[in-house]
Image 1 (cartoon, helix red, strand yellow):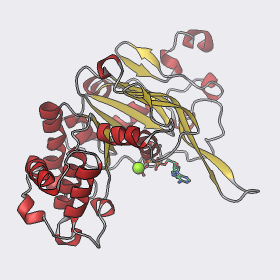
Image 2 (cartoon, helix red, strand yellow):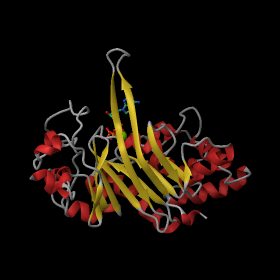
Image 3 (cartoon, protein in one colour):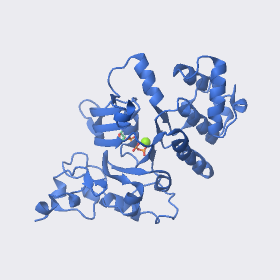
Image 4 (cartoon, helix red, strand yellow):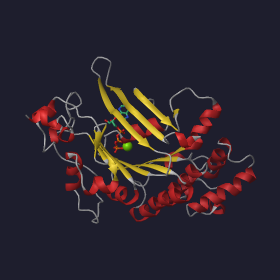
Amino acid sequence: MSGQHNLLEVRNVSREFRVGTAFFGTTIVAVDGVSLRMGSKSPLIVSIVGESGSGKSTLARMILRLLEPTRGQILLNGNDVWAKKTEEELRDFKRTVQPIFQSPHDSFNTLRPVSDALYETAVNLGIAKTRSEADDYIAQTLKEVGLDWTRIRGRYSTAFSGGELQRISIARALLPRPRLIIADEPVSMVDASLRMNIINLFEEFKESFGISFIYVTHDLSTAYYISDEIAIMYRGQIVESGAVADVLTDPRHPYTEMLLASIPGIGGKWTSRIELSGIEVEEYNLTGCKFYPRCHRRLPVCRDVRPQLIPVGNRSVACILYQDSADEHVS
Ligand SMILES: Nc1ncnc2c1ncn2[C@@H]1O[C@H](COP(=O)(O)OP(=O)(O)OP(=O)(O)O)[C@@H](O)[C@H]1O
Ligand SMILES: [Mg+2]
């Protein structure tokens, strides 16, 4: 039945935050009209890349049902993520989509053995009925991430290295064999030498279990290496998206161009975080393109007109330079 629906459909979703006091506060638009689709035919790894504060985690949390959108709709297998759910529907949701967070230390209670969390997930999600049934299943799943259940059972999170603990939290996410895993900066706190081992697991799970991933990261090199598709976010909007090889070898949006110009070429080492210097803030109120203040290809019209994300060849770009109406605006 799920074959008829897209695995994930994010429809024009926004999220605002009110910051400051009632009188002197201001509204931040953290995610601003984002649309995103992942089909259900074959599993995909989609990277979401952008500078700090561009809204990546806010978007991830809305998809995970952790933070409610201000506007828009999110559908998972055709079901509204934010619709009121029965307990069974909620369990179904958690069996379908699972998170991996940046810090594995936040995923486990330090006062209880990590194995408790694994048992709990297995039982709560209806994967195993008894503890011994769960034992077999957990052991098998831990093996998928290169860990041995007998070494983990009964031990506390403090007994493990960050890399080991992140593997355990990946195993936990894998327990229900979800259709989608949302990994928000999953390796940024892991020792650099171990990052690729963990990233490679995603590829393995995609192949062997048909799991799709949304991989949120600052790191263009791992995004390039691991993903099929990429979405570039800037100030709450997707400014360019498409096949990773297209977007990163032949960028169209001036922001993507700038990102790529600021790092060594493909095949080189992209280790630095994305941090661009340039004109700062005051931009949230603009009605025009959010990238206008930093854009090296801007037109006068860009100050006033907000470009929509539209198809340009096989990809999508939100820039007036690629819209049919651009000619009218230039003249
Ligand atoms: N709970 C909140 N209350 C107020 N503002 C928030 C809240 N959560 C996020 N924001 C703001 O929303 C914007 C987007 O934040 P978000 O954490 O989604 O960015 P990000 O792309 O994940 O950044 P990073 O790469 O640093 O993780 C930022 O300006 C942030 O300060
Ligand atoms: Mg974040």
